[in-house]
Amino acid sequence: MQILVTGGAGYIGSHTLISLHEAGYDFVVYDNLCNSSKESLKRVEKIINKSISFEQGDIRDKKSLQNLFKKYKIDSVIHFAGLKAVGESVEKPIEYYDNNINGTLTLLEVMKEYKCKKIVFSSSATVYGDPHTTPIKEDFPTFATNPYGRTKLFIEEILKDLYISDNEYKITILRYFNPVGAHESGTIGEDPNGIPNNLMPFISQTAVGKREYLNIFGGDYETADGTGVRDYIHVVDLAFGHVKALDYLNIQIKNKKPLIVNLGTGKGNSVLDVVKAFENASNKKVPYRIVERRAGDIAKCYADPSYAKEILNWEAKKTIKEMCEDSWNWQNNNPNGYIQGEKK
Ligand code: NAD
Ligand code: WQD
View (cartoon, rainbow, N blue to C red):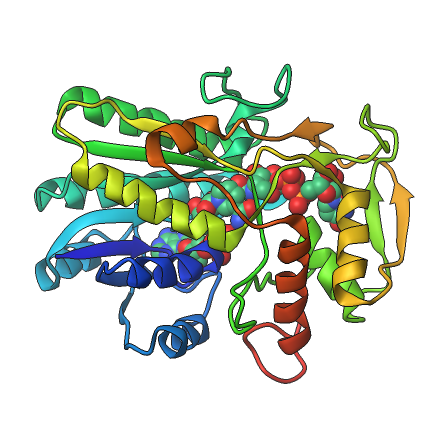
C-alpha cells in the first residue's frame, strides 16, 4: 500500500518524504512541478538512499490521476499540492480558485472512484484571519482575508461535507503556522521563485548577499518590540506531524469527524527576534530598514499546540536557533536554490 503525496516535490512535501520513509511508509509523489523541480526529489533520494516513485501531473487532470490510481495501490493521500502566495492570489484569484479548489475536487473525485478515503490536508493558520487573541486554538472563528486563505477555508468545508456524506472518510486538516528551516543535510530547503515574500528566505538571501537589506514591515505593532510576531516552526518538525497524522488515521476507528489540528510551536517570535537569531546562527549581518506595514498583515499569530500533543502525541522540538542554523546551512550551500549557477 502506498501513500500518495501530492505536491511532494515542494518545500514541505520534500521534507515529509524523508519522515515518511523513516517511519516505514511507502509513497508515490505526484506534482506538476509548477513551483518545484525534480532536483529536490533527487536530493531526497540521496538522503533516504532509495529511489522515489514520481509521476508528473496536475491535480486538475482527472485522466492522469485515474492512471495514477490504476498504477499504484493508493491507501491514503497527503495533499500538499497548491499555490500558496498570498499577494499573487489577490492578483490572480481565478488561477488560485482553479488550481487549489478545482484541483482538490478532482483529486477527491478520483479518490472516491478508487475508494480511497483517507486524506491529510495542508491548511494554514491564515484561516484564523486576525484572531481576537493569542495563542490560537482550533475552535477560534475562521475568516479569510485573501483568495489564498479562502481556498484553504473552502477546502476545509468541502472535506467536512464529504465526511457528512460518508462517514467512512478519515480526514485530518493540519493548520500550519510559519514553516521555516531545512533538512540538517543542507541539501533540501525552501527555494522561492524571484523575490521571496516570506521572512526567513528573505533574511537568508540578505545574509548571503543576494539582497541588500531586509524591509521590516511595520515597527509600530502592539508587540514587545513593535514588529510582527509569528509562530515559526521547523519544517522537519512539521514533516513529522504528517507521519503522526497518518498514524492517527490508520488507527482511528470509523465515524470520527474530521480532525483539525494546529501545527505550531506555541512560541511567538518577532521579526527582530528572528533577525537576531539569524545573525547569531550565520555570523553574518542582516541589514534592515523599518518600513510601512504590509497590507493584510496582523500583529500577532501563534498557536496553542496542545491539541496536537493530546491527540497526535506530536510536539515541535526545534528551537528558533536551529531553524536559523538550518535555513542558513541550506542557503549558504545553495545560494541559487536547486538550480546551480547564476539564476534568480
Ligand atoms: P510549495 O510550493 O513548495 O509546494 C507545493 C507543491 O505543489 C509544488 O511542488 C508545486 O509544484 C505543486 N503543485 C501546485 N499546484 C499543483 C497542481 N495543480 N498539480 C500538481 N502539483 C501542484 O509549497 P509548500 O510551502 O511546500 O506548501 C505545501 C502546502 O502547504 C500548500 O498547500 C500550502 O498552501 C500549504 N501551506 C504552506 C505554508 C508555508 O508557509 N509554506 C503555510 C501553510 C500552509
Ligand atoms: C512573517 C513576518 C511580516 C517579509 C504567510 C502567509 C500564511 C502562511 C505563512 C501559507 C510578518 C514580516 C516578512 C519581509 C517582514 N502561508 N516580514 N519583511 O505573513 O505570517 O504568513 O506565510 O499558508 O498564509 O500569509 O509570513 O514570512 O510573510 O511574514 O518584515 O520581507 O515577517 O510582516 O510580521 P506571514 P511571512
